[in-house]
Image (cartoon, rainbow, N blue to C red; front, side, top):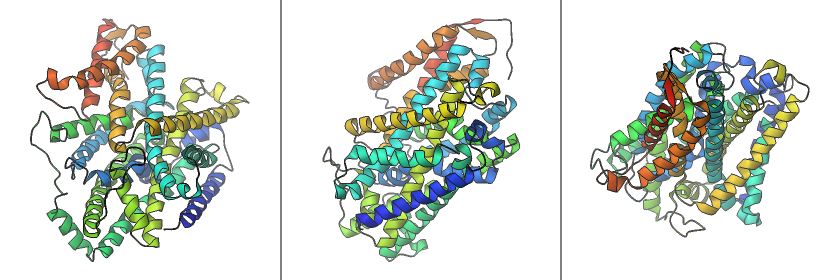
Length: 502
């Protein structure tokens, strides 16, 4: 497909988002609107829009690519998705009621009230690092596609492509914040879902299959195995590892993450927030089945047409992340190519725009004190918020450049590896706050515990084969990290007479 046509599509798409941003922020662009959309969000819009934020371009490209990856990944990812669903239910029934009772703007304010000042700042700082790394990694994947299939044809350097992408995102989020994000993410999720179904239709049409025939073909293929119960010790895809890991990764990356929780806190009541989470969970599980089906169809199409997995420009090795864009943009007709680009752009920018808003909110509330009305309404408060928003855009820019220089593996694997180390301490902090009521922390030592925990976790994971008789960790590593943090917090605590309840 013509790079010029793809570029024109990209410009038109962002023109639409910027128009929506100015329309939604015309009446008000104060900090209350930016942080929580004046607590007036509609649960059904948030539920649908959260799909785009949770899935991202990684799910759109990397999950289908993983289906036929070397090592026989197949549909094993769905084991992890089932764990995600349980994690979402725990968030809706345990964490959301807590956040609403305390009327929080930043969810890390709970840590301040429960554990202390240094614990609070540590939790907020962990989020800033975790979300910046995770969102930069997600955006990195899409920038690679834009670079390879559009900007390389105009000899535009990679760093310029990254900068353009972030400037476009900043242009429609800096003013309206969460109020704008809820509307744009709803629109982008619609495009994402539409592109998934249309992609299946176009590939089936190219393979001369009806939709029912296609699912029968997938069922009978070598890609459709979901549950793995062989070789517990050395198989990282073993069911319990993926399922348990999915539960705790979800609790940490969603329930303890300001990004997705900020949208839940923008609703009027806890009932609406829970309704949002339950609806979101059902849609999330079903959509992942379709993403995995797209992956199987891509490999079936590639085998039939003699298409090899594209090689990475840096390592020269096959890169499964690039199979979907290769087929959509070079081996199908113009309409499927546009549909693919629509879905990819919608999925990734729905994630990154939301992350930039959440990072700005967390820093302004947790480190600049804008959660207090007297600070939020100061004359220069909005100006400070704008500067913070710009700063995080540039931080993400530099992180993407570093990721590009250091990594060339499957992005979905990289994201959950990062999460295992960065979100683990948050899991330990919240667990201690929720379940240990009669012990007080030596608050100033908490940052040390949260630094040492990932380091000990890394040592344990890299030596697990020797220490545990050949055991190989997967995403359940986040549970070990959280447990190490929890034990460290116990060591720096002492029994008190006061019972703290929230």
